[in-house]
Amino acid sequence: MQDSLPNRRPCESEDVGEGMTVTVSFHPKSGEPVEVFLTGRGKASDSPMAEALYRLGVSASKMMQREDSDEQVA
Image (cartoon, rainbow, N blue to C red; front, side, top):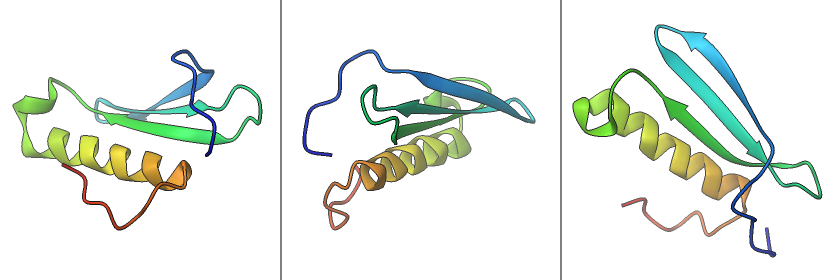
């Protein structure tokens, strides 16, 4: 996506069970999904699964925003 995203965007969250939630945010003008957050119980530093969910969300968000897919997620 060419134009920068505003700090506040419409979003929807869904509890998918086992203490996990998926949140998708949308571009306010086009309505296209632009970010996804995958969260579970506890903090990101609490478990390898939480860290993996964070990395997956970052990668998916970059794909939605059509950023260079060759970049590695840090």
